[in-house]
Length: 148
Image (cartoon, rainbow, N blue to C red):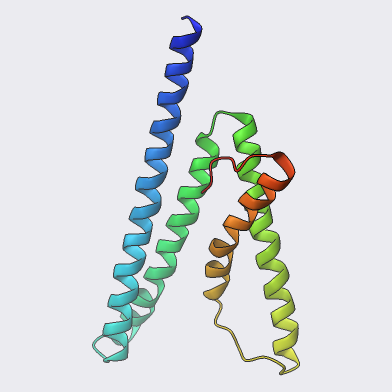
């Protein structure tokens, strides 16, 4: 196999991995939106009670687990070690920001200086912090990498 064929195969493999990631991630987000709206509608109107409420209330969270799975699989399927390292850095920055801010908020909350925050906001903050990981890569490595 010559260099151009290897490059073509590599590009095709990356495209397929990226496609699988987008299918997984956006499927999880679609399930999240549908289950969130369904749970909100049905539970707040008292149309579901008892154990069904627990199941229905858990479904949006399970969809977020699916989004985390999609991200993990994207990283595991990445064959280029440099791009995998950039992804790891991006995820670590987002995780450090999220853990730092939620820990500080928890102490402020403990001393009644800020209102209580619902725990599902932790995932929202983590996803919102992902672009900051890309910026950190750009500043320190000179490239954005393949942003999640």
